[in-house]
Amino acid sequence: MKDLPPNVYKQSYLLKAGVRFNPNLVDTCVKRGLNLSFYVVSAILISCICLYLVLDGRVYISLPTFFCLTITSFLYVTAYLVKLFCFTHIRKRLRIDNPPIAVEAYAVVLFDMVGGNQDKLLETPKRCAVLYKECGSKKPRFFTGPVKHKKHCKLHKDLMALVFIDRKNEKLYTVEDDKLYKTASEKKKKKEYSLSSVEAGVQKVSE
Image (cartoon, rainbow, N blue to C red; front, side, top):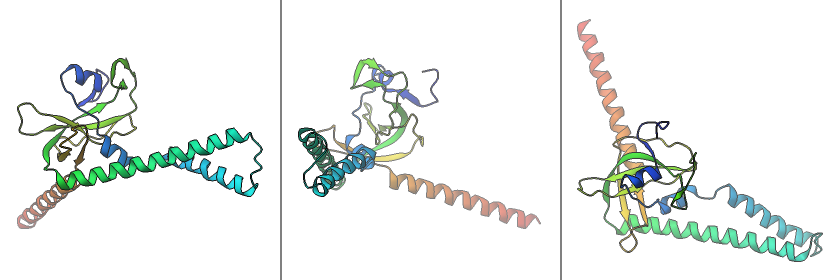
């Protein structure tokens, strides 16, 4: 913990401190979109289909291996698209049907636990997320933003956000912080602009 920046904690440390939360599955999947692995496997699938059609079924590797590779690639691409579609639908539904919970940015969490197991820890975590704390509660709940494959995440301290939780499954939730962050940034710019205007006016009067 000594080597970490301020307001950055490992998941195992937060768990020992009594801070429990479920990683944000919905926003993580939606924000990730179509990643590199999807395009690689899609390219393999298209290559297999094109080779089979061009060579008229005469493949220069064993047919079982060729068909196994094709079917595996097809299943991966299909499962990936279905998962992305389902989580996109869940995210949209949650933000329409469920009343939001006000939260504020609390810290950055580094996921050092392998499979959520405290006995298996990574020395250098490669995934992180912003940790949000419920506002106005004596026993606040904690949520995360989308999990990113990075060693560090940018934390905007005291940033307000909204969390929409599934009533039937609390592990499914979505965090809306884009609009609120934009609003806060605009207010800050307006404040800076007004201050600079006042300073310019004072300087003109003094002259």
